[in-house]
Picture (cartoon, helix red, strand yellow):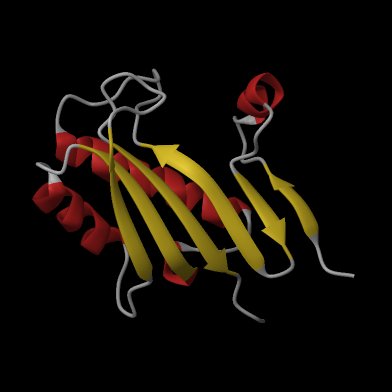
Length: 131
């Protein structure tokens, strides 16, 4: 029987309990990561876009690590952008976090995100490597 269930990284149990969604969900060797927003420990979005984008990929990496995967294991990436005017800074953060071979990627513009002033939300699917 394959492994199936929620991934709740350390420190995120309260979010799971309050909002009823895990950071990720594993089905066999596939990990579906919920949307991640780049914010600080205080829950606030950094003033600088580059800092927010780096924080989003750091959080994505930590969630994948809790599931037994890494940023290198991402096969599909979906990003939601409040405006597309910061795409150059986003691309720099993405390229610093994810190396070739690059995953499939869809970028979607949207009006707003759950956290006020957030510019991006990152959602990913990864495949855990075989041992």
